[in-house]
Image (cartoon, rainbow, N blue to C red):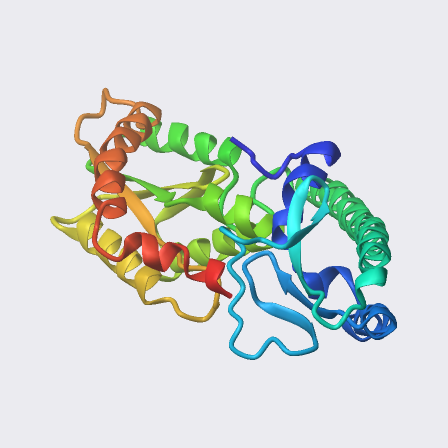
Length: 311
């Protein structure tokens, strides 16, 4: 499934989770705006991100740790999602002005929600247009190159890979090791960090798959997060050693503070000239699922996968 093709409406609904206060407002102007309100009424104000990280502090909040789950304060919401919490202390507000102060804060939150929504829609619209233009350009490039190579990764695209499989079937070469390489939790990266990071993950895995392969290996991208690798005349243990190197290289990758590449693999062999490699790819996918279940239940897997959520 190609998760990259997302409607604009769905994008607007989901991508707000990738935004923080600093992405939606100029902090100096936001601070100045809230300072005016704080000084006018004598209120202490604390604005945090959705997870409780302090963004603007006006007044005495020493020792105060926001609990955005149990005591969330006033919620700042954009596109039906909470992006911030405003905590207020009225101790310095004269009794006769407290109602006016509360009304002012309500209006201020409406203003911030409106400004934040405008900024969010502008950014997402611009990014969406850029991606559509990139897809058109990539599609044109694919057509010019007879769709031989996958534009994102540089390996064979699915149609060309199938042509190679047919040619290899007709050659009568056996044995052929057939490997399915599936990126673990690629959809999690897409949902939480967006298109660019999910594409980066595919490119990282593709580079590792290519780097660990010998020149005669045939590599293709057969789905959004799936690669097929064929090893003609595979020697005993060659495919297993290759998969081990690929998985170890993914686990050792630490060059991105968000991405934690991991792959599941399945290996089968064509040993009879009457067998078809396309069928073997399906068999390899079945074998891959057992490996995926093992990896995803391994100690420390979830912690590594979700490391980027803590940033």
